[in-house]
Each structure stands twice: as C-alpha cells, then as structure tokens.
Amino acid sequence: MFGQIYEYFLGNFAMAEGQGGGEFFTPRSVVRLMVEIIEPHRGKVYDPACGSGGMFVQSAHFIEQHRNDLANGEGDIFVYGQEKTLETVKLAKMNLAVNGLRGEVRQANTYYEDPYGSFGEFDYVMANPPFNVDDVSIKSVEKDKRFNTYGLPRNKSKVKKGDEGKETVPNGNYLWINLFATSLKPGGRAALVMANSASDARHSEADIRKSLIDNNLIYCMLTLPSNMFYTVTLSATLWFFDKAKQDKKILFIDTRNIFTHIDRAHREFTEEQIQNIAIISQLHRGKRQKFVQLIDGYFQQGMEKLAENKAQVEPVSEQLLEVFEDNDGKQAVAELVKQWSGLKNGYSYAMRVKIV
Image 1: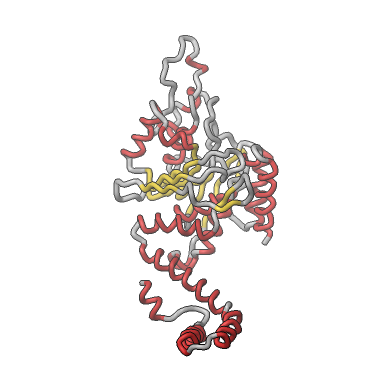
Image 2 (image 1 turned 135 degrees about the horizontal axis):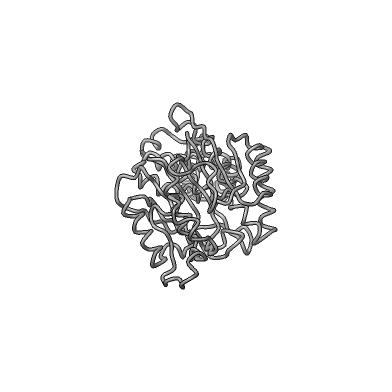
C-alpha cells in the first residue's frame, strides 16, 4: 500500500514538474509494457539511469502477478541502480524501501563510472536514459568495452588538428544502446526507451546498428504513441534485446494509435492495452497458451458482468412480456430470459474447450 501511494505521488509530482519531472519518472504504463515483454524473474535487474526506481517496482509487480507461472512459483530478483543526481537517488532508495525490494542504488555518472562492473553481469537491463546527449568525451569512452564493443558513435567529419583531446561523442544515444547490449549475461534480456531518431540514424550509428543485428541481439522495436512522456510530446521507440534469441527475425510493433487520454496533453496505456500489445510478443515466441489464457480471462470478466447485470435485465424482460401481444415476441423474450437464468459467475466448460 505504501508503495502504491509513493508511486502515485511520484507520478503526480512528475506531471506537475513537466520537463524536469521526466528526469526521474517514466510513466507507469510504459514501464509496465516493457516489463511484460521482457518478463524479468529470478536474477539481477540493472538500471543504469534508474531515476526514482520505477523499473524495479514494476519488475516486482510482474513477479507477484505471474508467480504461479514461474518455475516452482519462485521469482526473486535483486536490483542494481545508478543515478547521477543525489536527490533522485534518495527517491529511488525510498521507492525500494516502501516496496520491499532487495537491492542497492548508487550515485554515479554512467558515462564515466561503473560501480557494479556491469559488463556481461546482469540477467535483465531496463532504463529510460537521457536522449541526444552531446557532451561526452570520446577519450573517456573509446577504450571502455561497455561502449565500444559494437562500435563507437563518432563525428562523420575529421576533427581539427589540436582538438583531438576535446572531441565529444556527437550523440550519446548509441552509447546507451551499446551499454544495454554489453551489460547482459548470455540469455539475458533488455528493454530501453530511445528517441525515434536513433532507429534510422546514419554514419557511425548505422554501423553500430548493423553490428547489433549481425550479432542477433535486437529482438523487437516498438513505436510508442506521442504524448506518453512528461518531457517530450513526440513519440519514442522501445528497443528490446534478447541474448537467448534463436531466429534471425526482428519483431516490429506499431502502437502509435493505441492509447487512452489522461488529459489534453498526456496519454497512457490501460491494463488491457498493455496485455493486448504484450501478447504479440508472446505469440511471436510461440507461447500460444498465453493467448488462450488472455482470451479466457476476457470471457470470464464478460460473463461476470453479464451475471451482475441480471438483476437489471429481469425487470425489463417482464415489461417486454407485458408489451408484446403476439406469441412470437413473448416466446423470443422468454427464451432469452431462460438463457440468462443459466448464466453463472464464469462460463461453461464447453466454451473453454471451444476457445482452446
């Protein structure tokens, strides 16, 4: 309960803060979708730009909701976060505490510090890193295997003589993309929020993207609707990595027209929209039973609603019987009432078999 209250106030504070609020808070529905697709359970979860720790909280919620599906009903995780702003580190530590999460959060600038020795260390990596950073020194990252394993983003033109030591990365987006790929253990999975421009960036960024594809790391690219974040109105893209990937295909999902308005300036996904999008990934992985379970649940909810409405329908049917003069009309209404009377809180075994 404390965790839900804390998350509620974080979300409202982020909305009130606008541009500044997005530095520490990623909207809950976006994080929920990321978590539902990479399915974190049993292992170490890393967020190198953790903000207030929302990725960790939703990972724990996922485990609680799906505990029966996990092996032996177990799924404990240990979380590791780093964040450059001290005040935000305090928010994240409090978020872990009120949600009963095991882990640690440290103050660190990810471009220059690696407090956990992240290379090949984590089962799951999730983050919403800062976009389009252009002030990272090339000299500080060019020999760091976290950032150079799949190539380093560089300016397309040569640096002027004498300015070699001052050269910066033209755009830090692919530093983060590199970091996510290199932080995973064999079989690990990652999800990150990234600017749309990174998906078709050219020159050195295109070479890095090709290297990631050649190494069969990119599992899915998902385009989000606009106005989902407090910092930008444009849509962003979710990148998903999977080191256990078997085929050479990449799943592309376009969700730009799937959303629910919060207010005039902000949108979100409902729980049903999250499940409906995530099931595409499940089917892509061949988990057809997940689809059956989802539809099964929708039928269950629908039949329960029908049963709840029974008390309202019966008086109306009685009025209809009084109005109808012909026997055909009365017989039709009577047949409907008979079927309605057979409804229970659920639905028949025959219907379940038909769905399967």
